[in-house]
Amino acid sequence: MKRRELLRYTAYLAGVAVTGPVASALLAGCKRDEAVAAGEATYSPSFFNEDEYEYISKLADIIIPRTDTPGALDVGAPEMVDKMVGEVYDEESRDKFRDGLKELMRKMDADNADAGFRQLDTDKALVYLQDQDLHYKNPDTDWNTLPATDVSAKDTYFDLKAQIVGAWFNSEPIGTEVLAYLPVPGEYIPCGDLQELTGGKAWAI
Image (cartoon, rainbow, N blue to C red; front, side, top):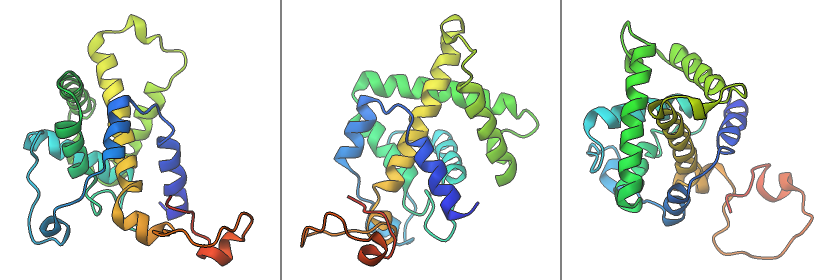
């Protein structure tokens, strides 16, 4: 996938409904441990167990893979999700998210019974997630008539996607190296040419 296509896709994903806890988490922000960011240490999740964290990492890598710019794993999106849910969500929201994640994991493995979702190669995993999008966004589906577990898996799926995309866009590497970043605003230029001002990059803030 080319970077332009990826950004269009992530922008599309960011358009899903962002819940109150997710918005609060994004505003709070998370800074990566310097040793982990430098590759000198391995991150150990504080809220999710290793199995749950592995699923989140797999999703993050498929949604925003490394291309000519850092991917979701490179900027620590799964770490941010772990900290957001564990440290920012209230107890009720944490419990709801974890229950939904368990249902989502169960469904993803059931849909890929031969080996499970985590064992899919990148291409197959991407096709599967695209199918999930179509399934969950089908306008003909009346979710009010389906089991609560199905609704829980759907809500958690979109919640996770919103968090992963938000974490990527709000990370320091993307904000300062990929997007145009101006820490101290200077001269006000209301109608400047973006190509001249930033080399064609969109503003980070």
